[in-house]
Length: 536
Image (cartoon, rainbow, N blue to C red; front, side, top):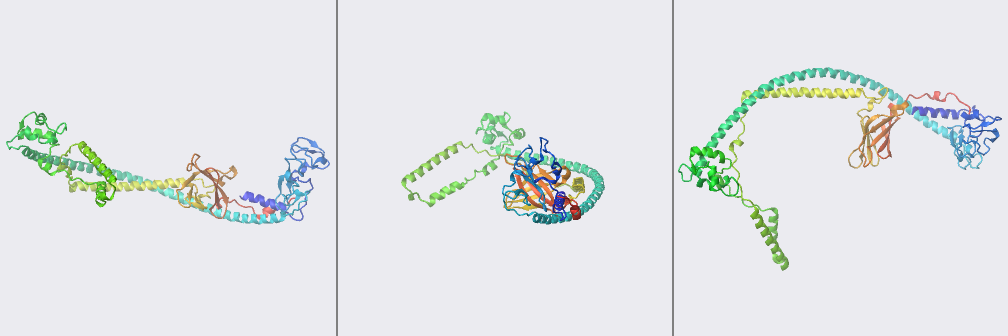
């Protein structure tokens, strides 16, 4: 921005000059830079070299040159241009078609020399106002540049602090790595006896459970034999076993004599010693007569729909409705009863599940004092190791962040470093735009709604001679049937750091204006700008 400002100030200075300035004579509409091509008393050669004509045919209101250079002061050539001297303001060019069209285009009125239009020379006033504006901008640039110097100084100090912190963390990391390895050894050393002690405890518990199970199984077998031996003759016969339908091998609802003999190992009856073999085959299905007597089917539970139907009938007598409606209701009830009977016929016979083994509910006893102390010691070793590993990870993360920040391109003198980890917002009538430099750009509806990613940090993308004047953010959230959103951020010089405007010049491509003192260039002094004059 300072280069453009410098050029504007120089242009104004040259244009305004002083009362001593002398205007060099030249044909109307010719800029001073091309005066040497228009010499009186010499033939004129078209600037494109296409032809040479007598000088008196310059500005004769007839176009002789293909490039229109022979008619700089008339509207004869459609491709010609007219130079407005605009003394006191900035000189400019206008298309030759605007010459003498009745509209004042040049502030010095030179374009309407033969149209009869009433024009006032406003160049001096325009120059004064613009110079005041540029002087204000020059002051802003000056102050911004001073702030930039402070930012550079702070960035340098910050870089030194970060480098020192990184060196400190590198030393801490080495110590933590040694500590982690030492604690790993302690942990593994403590876990070996813990594992052995827990395995011994579990093995002893499994053996104890097996003894308890076998003892309970023997007791249950004896009780079952007594239950089955109805005539107390010391034998369990086919007839006595046939009453236990839960033992049916093919689950057809009946236990035949042949099937029962198969359960008894082919015998008609067995004694207590032989029953032990029979018991191993039937115990998983066998239900004692006591448990069968206690397992009466539960009373039917009315569903909410049945309760509502019953309440409806009781509260509203059928006499209140027409007879034909009542008849329909009876038909519906009959149909429901028929459906219910059919469903009852389809319901399979109730199958009672075997009794749950009591030993399944017995929990393992607590560890003995010696085993528990080994577990506690191993757990402490694990906790210490985990804490050291966590501390090492935190140091690693801090180092990675510092290395990333130290190696980041924050400008030639790290003047943009202060923007890192900061965010700036601009609120419009509909959205809140959020710029987090070197991170992302987002947009969120002002009155509720999810945030939209307008792009992630990509790179500096200004022109070669001013690379750090434009930021590019890409790979944002995809548009419906369109590309991923992206944002171009143009940086301009200012005393404050603020987002000044946003727009969407193309679909899914956003443009953001951002002022910051970090982009301000060293301004030239006003004396240097105003030094020297030239003739117009």
